[in-house]
Amino acid sequence: MATFSHQGSTFISNFLVIKLLDHETYGKFSLITLTALYASGILQFAIGTTSSKFVARYVHDADRLRSAVWIFSVFTLASGLLGLAILAASSGLLARSVFAEPSLTWPLAIVSLAVPGLIGVVFLGGLLQGLHGFRSLAISSLLSGVLFVAIVATGAWLDDLTGAVLGFAAGAAIRCLVMGTAGVWALRGTIIRQGFAWREVRSEVAQELRSFQVPAGFAGFVTLPTLWLIPTILARSTQNFSEVALYSVIFMLKTLVVLPASVISIALQPSAEKACATDQIDTAMKIFRTASLAAFACAGILALLCAVFARDVLSVFGTSFTTASSELRLMMLAAVAEAVAISFAMRNQASNRMWESIFVTLVPRDVIMLAIVIAFAATWGLQAAIAAHVAGAIANLLGTYWLSLKSVATLKLSPPDVNP
Image (cartoon, rainbow, N blue to C red):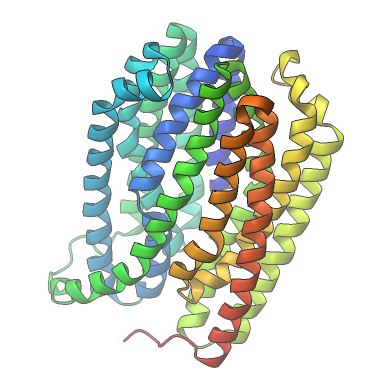
């Protein structure tokens, strides 16, 4: 419920912006907000995955838990402020030199205000997942999602593109505040009003966190620039923001198809981590198999429906979007491959194969995607961008599956040590 409300609010807000703005203006809005999302995705440096993993492992060790939460909180604040400053300072350069659209300077400067909130939401989501506070996560995500949709839609209605972007930034901040309240509530009695013995283990905890977060964070440095460059190259090559709007809608629909696999991974990863930490490897294997089967079934059914009714699905956004029906059908292949890869990646995360994941799965995938877009975007436009996603998703699935076999063998032979 938490993940669906979070992604659903993004989907609904984009849908309303499409209805309130014209086709080309929505293309600009999507490119601006994607820039903020990917900037925050890079700078959060895997804080969500790391906090979920280690909070789950330290949940019964109060000193280590308090130390970890303190480190996560300081990192989140510093990273958010850094992202705000970088994006605001580079807004003019991005608008003129990258997007070739100087009118986007001010909207890019405004959207930089969303970066701290976007990073904060990632951390708080991971914190609540690690604490198994799914009820609090669901309630706070649902409430903040409703507020987010209302604010973005109101902004678009009042002041076109600038209002929509300002609403996006305000909505991100409010979403962070609501989830922050839920996080403080979940930690009551565990961290708040406790002593400071946790300082004695802070350096030890920091070393454990770095061993996981550094490679996991670098994975974002590889992945997210590619996802940002694809629509950027498309915009520069075609000089047509309507194509960017079509790409944004198709990418958004792919995200919704992959969403159940992400929900399954988020919900089951803490349980798998606990099982591995206590040498219950058979239980962990059952969790991994369940995740893979469920991810494939959910993504397969949703992808099939989108492919069969592609024209009807796109007509919901407007008749001008139905021209991309063939591209949506093609993107569904990427959606199924990505969903299954997410379930296999759970095994790699549990065995701490983060560095290997970068070079075996992410680098080959992103090189393939960028090569296709750079070579063919000027000629084939949107079709080249979609083909890049399909080829990259298949390469990622093959690499993730191969690495997951090694991860399972490692877990069975030498399970992780139990934390003291």
